[in-house]
Length: 297
Image 1 (cartoon, rainbow, N blue to C red):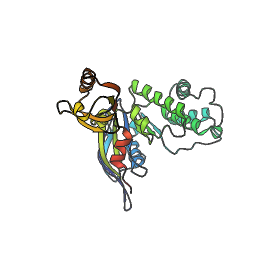
Image 2 (cartoon, rainbow, N blue to C red):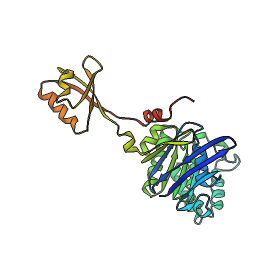
Image 3 (cartoon, rainbow, N blue to C red):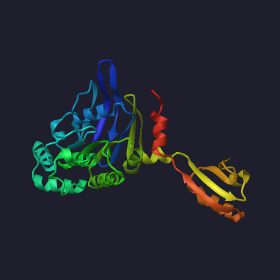
Image 4 (cartoon, rainbow, N blue to C red):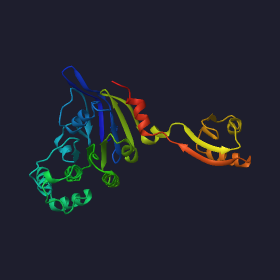
C-alpha cells in the first residue's frame, strides 16, 4: 500500500477533527476522499503529508512513517486555499519551488509542467495578473514539479471552466498512466466519479464508507421502459422482475443482472409490443454521497 493508516486521530482542544481514520490506498490508482465541509478531510491530508502530527494512531506513506522527510521528497501537494506572491512571475515561482525541491534538470522540468497545465507563453506574467483559473494551473504546476510518486490534489478544478476541468481530468489520467498515485479531494462529484478508482467517505471525522468505484455504483439494475401493448403482468414474465408503472406506457423495471436486459427486449418484441425506450438507470456518486453524509448537522 502506498498509504496505510491505523487509528489516525487528531484532537484540537475539545474538538476531534479526525477520529480513528483507517485508510488503505494502493499504488497507481486515483483515490477519492470525500465529505462535507468541516468533515476532517484537510486535517487528515495534512497528517499524511507530515505538516501536522496526529494526536494518536499512525501510518505510512510510500512505506515510510508519517512525517518522514525522505518520503516528502516524492510527494506533490496542491492545497485548496493557496496564495502565492503576487509580484512573482509564474516562472519565478516555479524556479523557487524547484530550488526548494533541489531539482536537477529544473529548466526541463519547468518546461514540462508548463506545457502540461497549459501555461506555456504565460509564465513571464506576474501571478497577481493571473485569472483564478490560471492561478489554479500554476499551483498544479508547482505540485507536479518534483515528478511525485504520490500527489495530493485538494479541489484541483476550483475556479476552472468546463474546458479547464476537462484538461485537469486529462492530466490526472496521464499521471495515472505514468504510475503516479493521485489522492483527490473534490466537491465536484461528477469529476470524482469520472476519474477515481476507489473512494472513501468521511463524516464528522470518521470514515463511513470505503469502496472501489465499481462496487459503490453497482447497486440494483433498474430500467426505464416505454412500450405500447404491455402490462405489468407481461413484464413480470416468470416473476423474476420487479415492475412499477410510472406513466401511461412507462414502467420502472428492476432486474437481477444485465444479462436479462436483451432477454426482456426480445420477449416483448416477440409478443408484438412496440418498444420505444429501454434505458438503464445508474446509481450516481452524488446519490451515494447524499445517502452517506447528506444529513443535516
